[in-house]
Amino acid sequence: MEIRARYTLIGLFTLSAVAAIFAFVYWLNHAGGLTKQTLYRVRFENTVSGLLKGSGVQFNGIRVGEVIALQLNPENPKQVIAVMSIDRETPVRADTKVEIAFQGLTGSPVLSLNGGAANAPAVTSTDGKPPLLTADPDAGQNMTDSARSVLRHIDAIVTDNAEPLRSLIANINTFSAALARNSDRVDGILSGLERMTGGGTQKASTHVFDLKAADAFPPLTKIPQGQLVIPEPDVVGSVFNDQVTVVTPAGDRSPAIQAKWPDTLSRLVQSRVVQSFDNAGYLKTLGRQPEGLKIDYQLLLDLRSFQVVMSPTPIAEISFSAKIIGENGNILGAKLFEARIPSSISDEASAVAALNQAFTLVITDLVIWTCKTA
Image (cartoon, rainbow, N blue to C red; front, side, top):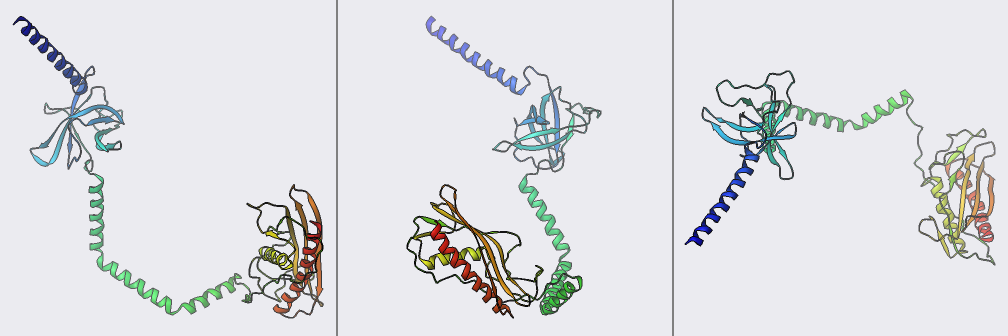
């Protein structure tokens, strides 16, 4: 009997110790522990969805206490009263703002107290109850409620202005229909304004002419081995775009002939040079871009002149320099290629024909010289 009584006492002591520990922890977390706590009430004018007893209270982002009670206002069922216990040293003022904030990945709600002027009076109690703070009217409104409120406002605006909106849409339809019926007149007016302000352009030719690759080559006894790469030529001097360049003897652009190439001149020359090498059949491997290819030789071209000079005796003039670069970067050969072909040029077709004639001469020389030098 004595042994059983001893075990009973030990069990009771253990249970009492555990209960005391739990009570101490609860006191530390809820009753303030070693810090002195002060109670405040917060009145919400609407829902406090998510806020629970035990939710944290933060002041300017720092935790200062927790919510210890939530109850409905018996005098006004729309209002909710939250009682919070916070550190007595927290500077709660009469103008301190209260709202519900959400933090963390789970979005757990907390009561958030923000600021207040340093010279504002402290909150005091007038009825013997904890001091009362009033939350912002929208403090408890979540994102869904906010979105619904915004949509209701938009719907009210649209409903109140339904007739003006219908008139506006009808006017837009009428204007767009009138604009479509008079599109030709609008184009004419815009063209007239361009001519009047000097912004109009000369009448552009719609004729596009191509550059022909050389296709007649003599046989060679020595054929170079390895791969030749021909990058896009560089442009020296004038900017060569897709226009067939026609100049006066003084070097000024001439509007006498308007014609276009199918691409910018540098890309077109690259394409026709590669095609000319293919037509010659001297090389087994040929490329356009050096990226990702084993380069044995590179043929670098600098375009200097590619134009028609409109003088009493018109001349088709082509000039470019060429360099052959070896695998180790050494210059294996360099040469200037030029051709000046006097021709009877009277229109676009004859101008392009003269340029093609000059191009065939220089490209034929270029292909043969490259294969002999490399």
